[in-house]
Image (tube, rainbow, N blue to C red; front, top):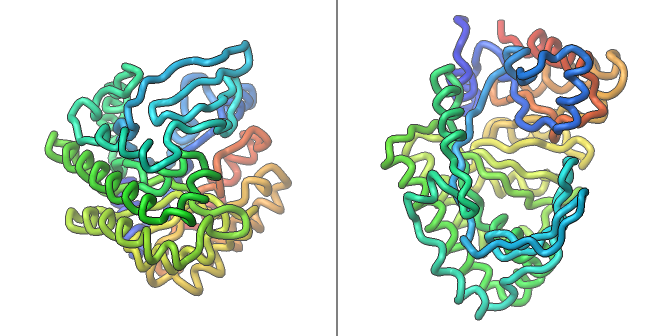
Length: 364
């Protein structure tokens, strides 16, 4: 088979057809990882994906927030506490990679939501400038550069459930799902219309996409954050709207979801998702099992255990060969580590991993 571009390879795989080889993708490297790798052979100013000639998905974001006023509450040399554009108070580390701490939301009640929901209006300015005045021009330039290089092009709206969890905080939002599901559904409905309206604006402005990729951690290490019943009754229809929007335009619909997704996958198939990523191995996901159960209906993206990549070459080989040789059968598998690439992984081990995936992931 002739060698494909990244775009052709990824699109073929997401449609569960057979490309020339398994796509090679990693999307998030910790800053500490890059610092370490510069000392171990990665040239300064070069990304590991460029250095290793990997594939690319180029993402186009837009301002997905409520556009509420932001302010700094407290700041030290190590961290800052501030309110964000969704009205949530968060603590963030300044010099290291970590999930921000969510301390207090602005939106707690139906009355709070009614005061702010009108802020979610599609607006062309959201395509180029975020609420802090930082412009997305650089992101657009990168998008165009990768587009010219043959990258797969994806728009990155926010999922309505993840928006709700981020706006209110997990604890308050999940309690609200149980106590006032009609309010939850009003938020989902409003945000779906806003997100798809913004996506259409991007298309109307001349941007071309191959797919849509939503980042939405709706599971934890033991399973879903809410019941399958709640998903079917209150969420499914909105995910189907996203899926219909994509499929009417010939796009694929990808979901990033951390945690254990075994119970979730049949619901994602029902909703119309084309692919699930990153399949955290440490949460118990195993692409070999999922491939056997659901490989005809959804593509799999990831599951190579980051913990194993910090160990010996023999263990890395076992991890890569045993999973990819099964997952690649009949297409529908994209390589990705099972989370972000952390600084415990040496540059030598990472290069070895990518070399192995190239070897094992070829289709003869």
